[in-house]
Image 1 (cartoon, helix red, strand yellow):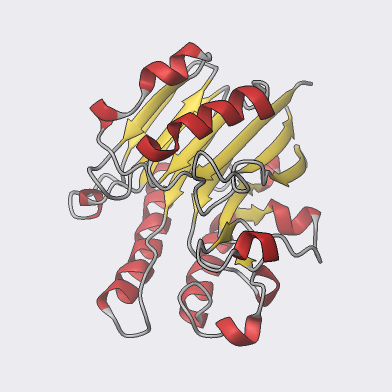
Image 2 (cartoon, helix red, strand yellow):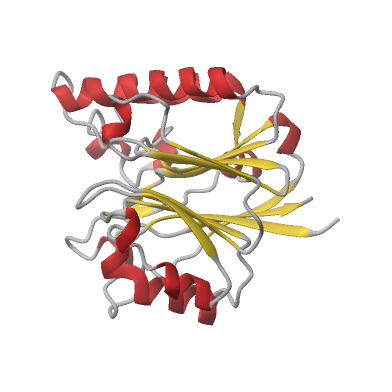
Length: 264
């Protein structure tokens, strides 16, 4: 049995964050992350800093988009299979999903839409995206497969996942329709392993830049590691690493990375 660590990080522009990201991987993590899933790259495949990652031992597959969205999977191991997008031309105009099989594990990296206020087009687009994601899973995978689905899912599952449930009630990320869409994803066959391991812990993964929210810990938990039942006993720890978020220079992302520690 060996440790296998999988991380997820919304970098909010890989161009802006690449120096910080490489420093974090080398100085703070010292190479202990086997697979790192990135969201919100805001760049095209050819402009992704492949060379910077290769210099520290990672190979990356990218599904990029200029100025918006974009996802990547970086790993020290071999890619056994790679799938880009949802296999649907309409949904893949926005680059939000990339999947790979690494060491026999299906890793699916998702950047869900932010959404909008109830009744707006972006609100309905987000709900339809969740429906499409479940359709994609049902088409290409089974709940019996070894799957780790990670990413910025842009939903705070429960009131414990926001710093002030009353203030944030019915705002983007906390609306009942969004939470129901997330619940349907879990019902497909996933376990929210952070909440399983830490049933009563308040831990956020995103903090607004405005008002020094990170220093007050006024945030939301919207970045997740979900696993199918076959892997739920293999994950031993979930960590939200605040090191990259608490930097003043280089400027941080508004998210912190989440790392899952597996014994495989």
